[in-house]
Image (tube, rainbow, N blue to C red; front, side, top):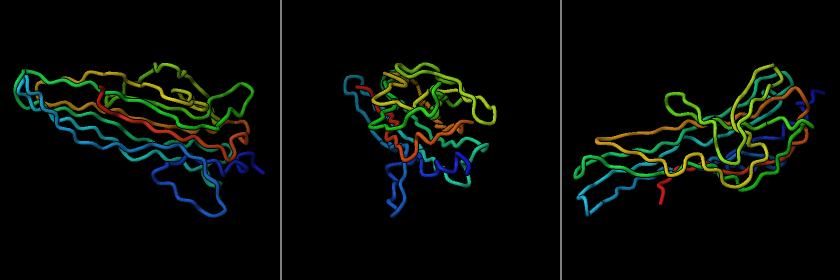
Length: 212
């Protein structure tokens, strides 16, 4: 029996879309969708700013006997988070600050290898493909999968708690401006057995919001 075959119950899923199926156990990675329209009025500057935060579809990764056997590709899922600001009138520019962060509420995933090879990788890039390589308390790593391909990003295999991706980032414009961040999570198919994560789960979310 393939050593990947025994790992088919391990899955990364989304709490917002979680369906309980009798006789099946899922592990899941959650992405909470945020979509919010928030006009803000500044009486002092007689300025009306339109602020909008949004994110894409939840991330979901589903290993099974067809897509996650030994020698197969890694499993990935992508989404985005964006902040939009439109300057209406008053001062010559409008600006806001916003936060983008990862919060892992609970996590029972472990490393399957004695070398602690990363198994769950998070990548964050802007719309031009520029990658974030520093997040406090998360390690930016490179890992080679079972097919010899190198994957780079933040190791969130055993992550727990809040991790600030962007903190009080300034968005400023004279007209309108959109900043979009693309997030990708990869479940790495190692050459070694990953049975240690059978029936394990990680629950968390990525959120974008206005800074206080």
